[in-house]
Image (cartoon, rainbow, N blue to C red; front, side):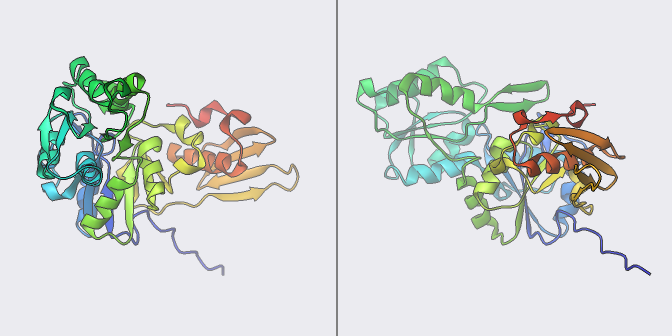
Length: 345
């Protein structure tokens, strides 16, 4: 009798610290996403859980309070913010005690002050550096002050400029809204140079989390390929993309090598489920490649990627499609991809 194989390991197997993004992973706006709170609480029964956020508009304490209201067990020290990482970068650029022009909200001001710097809102105060983060109230006046403080015409071409993050969008309860990247871009257009970035996809925020939580085998969960997954990969950290936020099937299938996660999850309950392998075979008769994940099968015939069998779960079909497309080594635009692989339905 054939020996039954052991079940595939779950994404959380062997993990000692679970690190989670917030917007699009735990909540959208003020409301928790389905199954997120229950799943994280289940994980926290056995391992440490920390939270990484590029959102610079709130303090770690206010983030922790929000998560607690949603039903999670969180204290401020469980939250690693991009303003915290930005303050570390500033300390390596200008002397502690220097005056810093802050474009952003209370979360950024709080971390800059805790790091020993003096905060100003005016370029006329001759700041030693500029730090910029998202806040809903940031407008033209604030962006103009940053531009005045940084532009070469004012003799400040070398003045340090640190951005907490460059996310182009941010998920809100009403939909997708412009993120800090759009505000940074406005200043960049004026001064003609780019900032140092503290948050995802740069590794500073990941390194800060690993150090704070003493992680040896972390797993990071995000909802964006261009910040969350790219950043985790840069930090050498395994990652999972959950399909409850910004990026969807179409973006997954088109992901470049540097932005591909180890795991694709429909929701956070799948952290505990055996993660099915993608099995690749070659059909002898046709020479076509077949990629199977559980009962979902994708066929590659020449440059065409087709659904052979959709299977019982859309997430398994997406896993098979991603493995098939990524395995070709071709860019997505060189392939004819069955629309059913990225249909939102």
